[in-house]
Length: 173
Image (cartoon, rainbow, N blue to C red; front, top):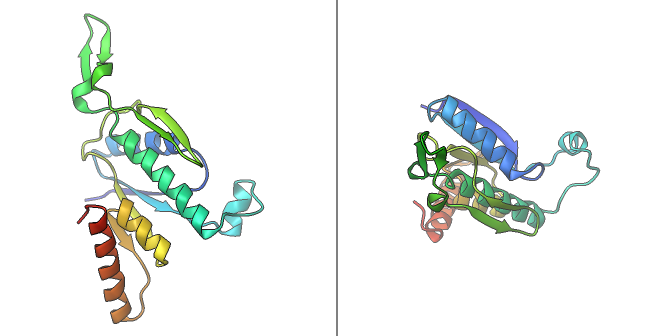
């Protein structure tokens, strides 16, 4: 019952902005938002961001991993139990119940909590596309659903098995 899927890059911009925008959309849609996280860097996208050159494969996925770590951490940082909404004492949030993040990565940094509470579904669903080894590893770690263009059934089965094994390595099903 996903209603809206937002495609955003994990290479440019800041993860806090994406986390806040998607959390807001997830609340507005009553838990029916999803995030298609991409790492592509086609020339038109690079030009739109004012860049002449992109990142090599390894750096792309390092950046994407930090980006996803921050976004998903922020989505969990303001749990419902932290909202006390005590108008009489002018207290909306109990800081002791927050789950702030502190990610000091090589490419992105973020500390604190998101200003939006955990969404109705816990967090937006994450989609990811690709078929390289790095893409499969990234998707297995962060995505809820992967899509890929496999033209041969045996290759599709291998892709599926590879991703399932990688996901299990992260304690995911």
